[in-house]
Image (cartoon, rainbow, N blue to C red; front, side, top):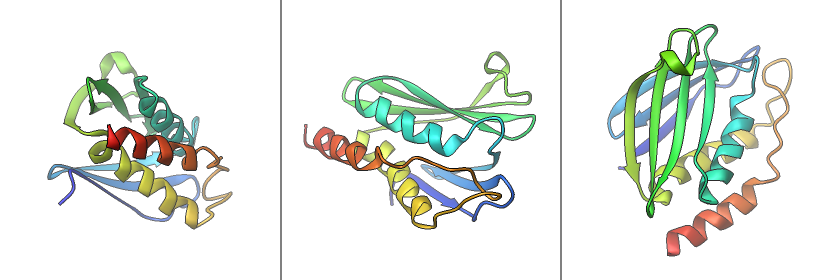
Length: 147
């Protein structure tokens, strides 16, 4: 069984129900596409972390939010998820942390994005997402896995 499993329901009027299972811990996220598009942020975050930069994604729940942090730790990636009742980082509390190889932590999110892309969700259910960087992210992930 993989460390991370991601399931979701089709977005509906700007809301995306996401279930993350991190090493057995379940986190339910019902994210809005306002004021940000967390799917687009996730693509940028994956690209940053495979290039060695720490990154984050804000999953806005209106008014609460989950903050997902991807951090490089030597040859591994740490994923930390915080929750804030008002979406302010300064008020956030840690709810989960998991660490593993880039393949263990990042590939489940890459696969989720490819699956999400395959449905071509669009307005009014979900805003436009630019998926053009996904093939390059996959190449970087594959190269990182071989190191």
